[in-house]
Image (tube, rainbow over all chains, first blue to last red; front, side, top):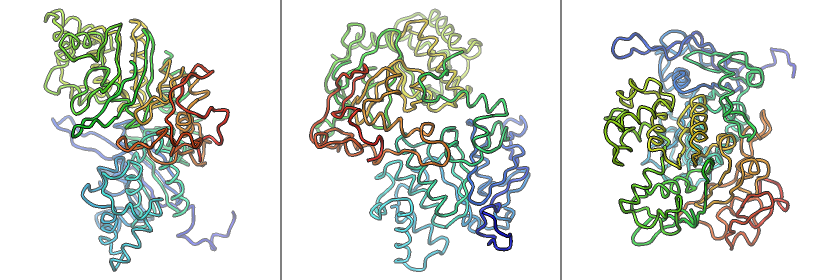
Length: 278
Length: 323
């Protein structure tokens, strides 16, 4: 679709950069004076509005640390993260940041308060951010949020332990949507789920991205899921991107030996596969 | 194993969790068991190992290992037979290895418990460590679990399971916590040792990719029952149970790649204390008929060589996954 740039509403433009990381590193001091551990080393990434960037890698490669830096939970040691044109720094309040970018975790049961009903958990977010001014408005919004993740309003009265893993993950997603963020960083959102509910969450995330014009950074070790949900994929190894490119290209024509090794090691569900071959 | 049932004793009533499970595995065979959480696969594995603790207990059936009945009584002699003839590896080596005991002592423990002398036990456990690829066994045996990587710990687990030279190796999600490259190494290692020793291996997992490439035969469990058991190739080419078909259909690699929706299975696995009447899968099944709502199907032999517990043969199935 071609339009003169002047006609484009900047905020609605699908090609606008919403998240940009430049030269991000993170090092931690290690015990015993063995020198710093570099968890993230010089990562550059650009996330366009409405796009989904997959980050795939093995445990310890730094992908979760990178996710935490992107949402501002940890400052980078060097480098910058720009969220919708604004550089993350101490001057940007935690709350203002949370309104724009949210993190969804792997295990919904450990990210939901076990003693709080779903309704209270969601209403709390609305209250903290001053998004509703009355009890009834909060109730309405909570039901709306639940409907957004295809849960009935009756789920509002449940406690986390009264839900299945898939339902709890839906609630965690609903909670992150309560502030109407522009970007979701999803850290292994399907890895704790059973095979049969994994597809359901992947589909839901796809629908939400389209409906709410969200952008995703989708972090996972699961190559099949990453392939399904990302437009672009970055393969992370030892703190940096070994390769980044359009998803089909990276999977079909991997350039980096590490990407190839990773793809070869995946147990594909094919009885004629050669996983056990030497 | 035939007709195995496991129940949870609560206030004098047994809540059945595993229903009438019959499985067999031959020497030199790798049997895969696939199921989601709550399918009963772990309980079945524990029952075979005789590791069910109250309030869990086997409520019926029999388990025969090389002609010896294992379920009749838990006396010391049987326990000994089990310990020598079977080895087990678990999902999380960090929680199943004792953090306070050196690796060498832990691997040798199985032998010491069965009366092998200290020196011989040390010698054999060292050999077991080398066999699983920890070639600097002299160093490794002096270390504690936290000093090893996840892959090395899982190798230590395998070494301690194999040190008694068991006829049967039972593994419950042993590679789920590991990275794919390490998982591949472990699968290759177990396949190699299994062939060398003509061992029987039972490998429980939720990962259909692992099953496809590792198992000779596969049992699919759902709600505490085996719903299909088939040669691996048949299961993946021509599943005979709608649940197997739906599971295979929900894999991302099988769905149209790109931005198409993945096939999902409607609903959630049932609560074992409130199983539906009839076939436990019928509320989620696209093929369910009136009969499925009242009667529970038994495993029957199919032309493909598979066994499946379903009243509706695949040729009569309507659309595969969605109701």
